[in-house]
Length: 333
Image (cartoon, rainbow, N blue to C red; front, top):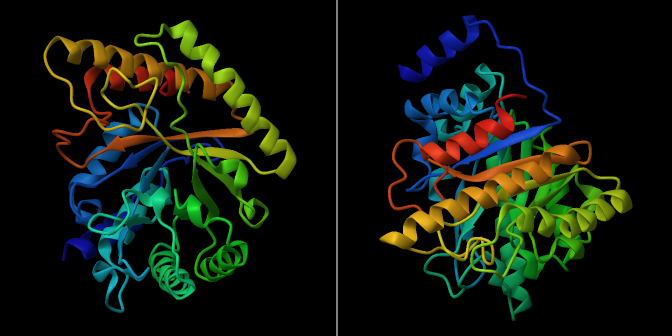
């Protein structure tokens, strides 16, 4: 009944004027379970709140588990019909004139690997099984999300990027299911090594660049740290002819946010206020560095936001001060 009502409302509601899809002011709406939250009534409310901050793109990241033998499995995608937790967020975003990126994630928890960037295979049969079953998973997601505006064929699987032919085969399979613009989200340390950028529409980078080893860098030092990073990225754009987008960027609530932006941490007491100020300063510096380069660096997806409370999350962007930082950079545009 709810799905029918939503379809009726969307069919008769006037479509808002779409924002410029070439400029990405994005936010990843994450989940604290397996992703049902994206199909809930609360998702639209979060989009409304994000629109007030100047967000014009959002991202969701459907999960599949990886086994020790390389097998990929997603029980949430079983069945013939496209699941509402994938189709509804696309409809909700489009109803508000927003674009949406679908970026499937490999859930490595409980596997032999400490994170996605460590996944690799000693046995050729395990690697073959991975690419075959991972391709199956991506096909299912791309088919269900065929109305999405962007689609990533992977993220942070950089110990596997040397298998160029396998990735090109996956790209071909995904293109048969969707007309979305395709990217791959490479880690900040490995994006120069990706051999198949020519087969994609955009270069995706997980932009957790270390900026400064100093314990409490000022805004000027953070701004200066971005200059060589931007020069490297611009050179890759000029070499490939592909636009760049930061498929993730964020800063942990930590005193090491400028040194190791990716490192999950917990701070308490007086250190928390200092860490919060550093997190805000890092984000402000990043947004200020990105915005003037939008002709080739299209923008970024901030990591991350939640439907409802993100209590306990060290990357959560929904705080009064971080909202202000985002709005100052994006809402005026």
